[in-house]
Length: 303
Ligand SMILES: [Zn+2]
Ligand SMILES: [Zn+2]
Image 1 (cartoon, rainbow, N blue to C red):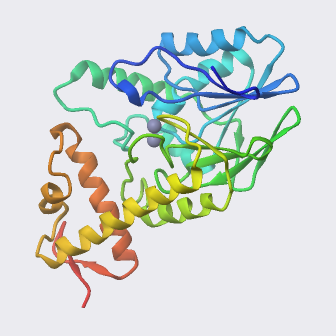
Image 2: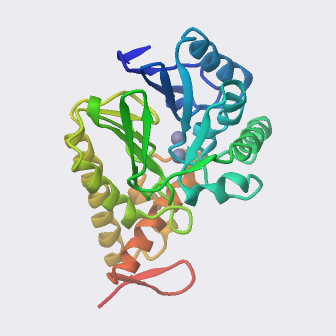
């Protein structure tokens, strides 16, 4: 699917539990070379869809598979595509230990309810596949990758995860944002050590400086008014932070006690994710010395 002549989106049949939130995989190509931005899922159907798309372009040699972060919806197909294409996997070094540690309870993009055994097993398979996608090329902020005559600039944008990266393609004024900025809704931010709300807001502010004309997110649609979208995401978090401060002032001292006020119609399946999100705000406010921990799992405003 053509986004621009040099940027394509490679769809795959939707994996069973993500619905409209299926991960986006983009192919950037120029002068006989190509790079994937994220790999999508590692199930047979998804990988086959991506490889067939590449197979239809035999004149394009895939050089890189750039992973925006370690989460399995973005990374579990990467190793199989590397084996089939000879491309190198590129990732920020801070992601690698989370990628490898597939049996730990590192938060992912979807929480799986304990009673959904088949889904949980599939997720474990995805995470095991993701763990095989050890990067060939570690890349940090400011790193550049050449694809034909194009230059992909890596922007380190910690927040959703600590090693999340975005990729700026100056020649197209296109910004690939992974899960740092979505085309649909807001992304989950966990408290440290997995994510960081303070760094997340700094990352969004920084992305505004890129003057991109096209945002290509890890989930959801492409966005044209990039500056406004980024500002919307920043405003949303600022409002949520104000709400957390108000609830604290009203005597709601734990993330759990704030839950129903912040998310009145919360699906029970995403309670853990919602709690982490509130805790991420509390961790940011604690670091800024605007609140302080009280008893275990409770906070209070600093006088
Ligand atoms: Zn994702
Ligand atoms: Zn993610």
